Length: 94
Image: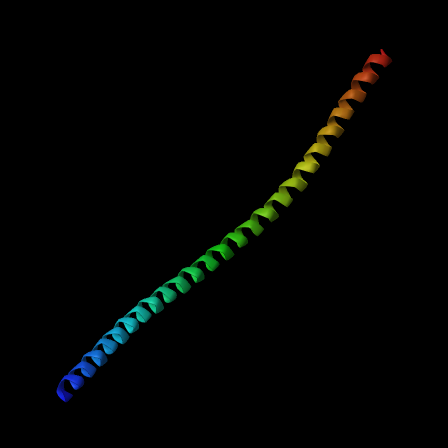
């Protein structure tokens, strides 16, 4: 009887050790997933920063183009006004 109790206790201890081994394997897999997720997060942060820099450059270019376009519009209206004055002067002077 005593030998059976020892065998039962050893079986239970073995089962508990097997469960602990399974849990350690599961923990290691979870840790690997966490490392992978952290690497992906760092990659995404780098990509977002690069896109942000590109957006800043595009914003600067848009501002420059808007300034040039505004100057072209002003010059166009000056030319149209000069042509209109020339036509009016030719019409009323003759």
